[in-house]
Structures are given as C-alpha cells and as structure tokens.
Image (cartoon, rainbow, N blue to C red):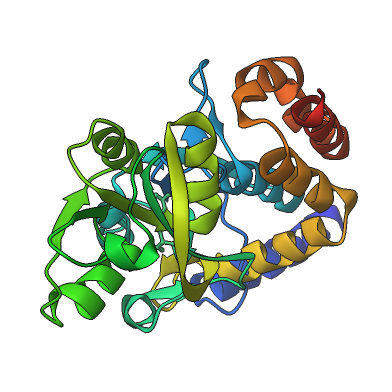
Length: 289
Ligand code: ARG
C-alpha cells in the first residue's frame, strides 16, 4: 500500500518536473531581483544623500514597489547616456531616471505606464540679463546632460537649424549646474521638476520653459524578456491608490530637499517594516518648518 502510494506520488512528481522542463508550467513570473540603473544627479527624483543613500521620488518608488511586489533590488548609478546601452547589454534590468517616453527609446526598450510629467526649464545665473529668447540665440553657450531629451531638443531645433549656440554636453547635471554657476556656460537646460530643485540651492534662476510636455516612464529591455513590466505597472497602481503616493509627492515636490539626510536617517528604516508609515513620516519631516 505505502509503496504503491509513494510510487504514484513519484509518478506525479516526474510529470510535473517534465512539464516545468517543457516550459508548460512555470514558477511565478515575478523576478527575484531587479537591477536598477539610475543617474543620481537629478533631484527630486534621484540623488545621493549625505549618508550615501539613494533618495528621491524614483528611488523610493522603486524601493516601495519592490517591497509590495516581493522582490529585491540593487541600484546602480550610471551616467544617463549609458543607461539604455546598459539595458541592451543586460547590465541592468530597469532604468529609473525620470526618463521621458520617446519613439527612439521605444525602438530599443519597452516602457512602463507613465508616472509623472514635465517640460524643460531654461536656467541662467541670478544676475544674468538673458531672457528665454536671448538665452537660446546669439552665440551663447548652452549646456544640457548628454543623452537627454533636452540635449536632443537643442541639437535638433537650434544647432541643426543653424542657430548660433555652442552646445555643451555634460555627463551629469551637477557638472553642468556647476559650470553655469561659475560662468563657464551661459545657460543650462534640464526638466522643469529638476530645474526647480536646482534653483533652490544655487544662485541661478529659471527664465522660461520649453513646453515639450514629456511623460516619464521606467524602461526595461526590449520585449521585456524578464517579465518585469506587469509587476512594475501593478505595483505602481497599488502605490497610486494608497496614501503612500500623496505622501511621496509631498515629501519630494513640496518638501525641503535639504532635509533629506536627516529625515532618511530618522525614518529610512521604516522601508523594511511599514511602507505607509515611512511615506507619512517622510512627508511630515520634509515639510516641517
Ligand atoms: N527627462 C529627460 C530624458 O529622459 C532627462 C532625464 C534625466 N534624468 C536623470 N536622472 N539625470 O532624457
């Protein structure tokens, strides 16, 4: 009897193993670990705080969605223009970098649902007399981060149209902002949410906007071979339907970004224990007077 039953179970086991081997049965599609690439030079979406934490709206979204959906993440800081190549060469599984949805990128990568939007802010130094028109003509040196939509916009609409600007491309936004502050370039262009963060902490101002109305997405490899997109989109929807979303928005878009290191030191541990409490406390801490 016992031997018989055992034999039957082993028989079933063999069939199941065969089905798995044939790819007819598969374990849960959700990946166990996702390697995320970012360009951590872009507050309020991604930067590195005084204690070496990846912080920002994208970074917290990625950490929170991973917890909700049950997988591990590893975050790598890579130059923005190397992120799509890193996806293509399988160095990273996902790009979280305030990346705009574009036709060109969709040819080589797949995109999640959109989660934010912005246009392009044109920045000059506080004492500069340039305005949105004079900033973009007349022999001015104009900077942008390499590989971004603003670099493309300046190239396509000004350089290729023979408008007399000198386009300076930077590996990171930090380097571009530094050159603007030091007077090495006249103008720097970055997405409006980031530009608004940069002007708060530097002697620079926004003189106008290029109304490109861009949608931000997370990119994965073309064809999504690791089946990441459904997991991300579902997680994103769950966050958006919870109080976590508004608290993250408040923390990073209304709060004082200079408080991030202190607030993260105090509440960052909650990311492992209680996501709603984390977002609630973070927004309270960042928005405190
Ligand atoms: N939205 C722009 C783009 O997709 C710029 C993004 C820059 N992001 C960053 N983390 N530096 O090209």
